Length: 109
Length: 111
View 1 (tube, helix red, strand yellow):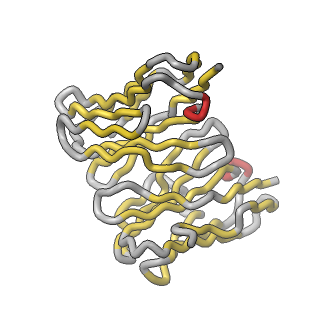
View 2: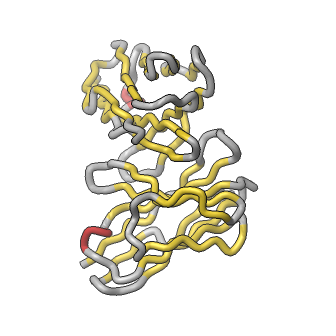
């Protein structure tokens, strides 16, 4: 069974600092997604990573995928308060989509 | 225009009742999904439909049944509601392997 693990589950950061969220998964897949969810809101797509070595960047967020290590990272650069949210990774294995438990990020001034 | 819409946004009902949640997407996507998000924010896929054919059916009680009248709609019917069904239910759609677009969610409370 495909398992997806994120860590940390809770992350409190100071503004201006850098940090990385990790997403490990248990079976072979080359399709990984990152989503953001604000409290009480729906999920918003951030990145789609479809091949080994894929790297995508949007603003202060950068995501990468290593399919051999079954690992994706979401790197936050110079965090700002607006990035406070819950971040989910999701892995697709033959149309079976599994989500990680989410990382609740709080950015403090 | 809303890409993926769900109705109702809130649903409060008693145990044992039958209810439906509707979902519509105007993106022309060929795959639609239903997810359940529990109180701990854990997301679990319930169903997905591709071109009106069910392609995933997780270990979901058969009290839950998806119905897709056409490619743009995937409704969720729930029979004999139980307390444990209380959650937020999200509909989503996607095209091929690309990202999913989520609806606003339906918060179901069973009393």
